[in-house]
Length: 142
Image 1: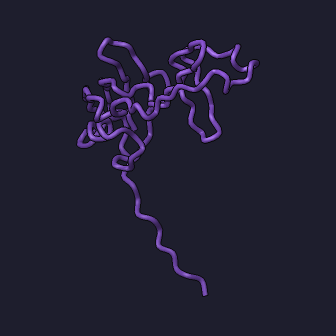
Image 2 (image 1 turned 60 degrees about the horizontal axis):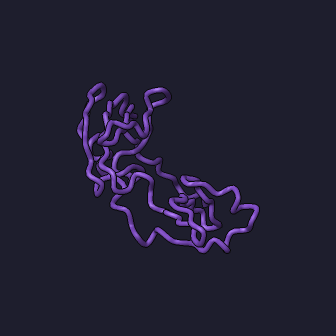
Image 3 (image 1 turned 90 degrees about the horizontal axis):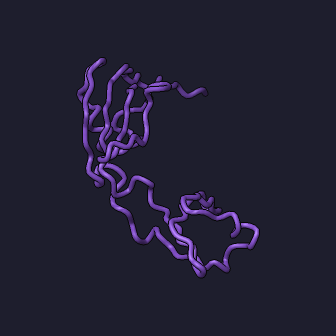
């Protein structure tokens, strides 16, 4: 379990566990971005580390294929009047792209992670380490 604070290069804090519960995860499980996972490896309980991750170690670079201009006529009038920049639009496939531009003819939707393309700095403190236990063996019942 770790406490962490994540900031951008301009000092903007984008996430933190400091005001709540520590983050609980299994090292090497793929639950977290690779750079964060790697930074925790080798820490002892009570130790802290500050790590700066380039975009490739975080959420990657923005993928232009995840940005689409949708014709404005595709939106029902009652929805169109509610659209605004920065709004997430939930789609039937479970993705929620963000509106990045609205013109008279198109609405631009971006499905990239909001932190794609950003270098990320994490201040991480290992607060507890629980070693996994082997799964109990089971004997087939005849």
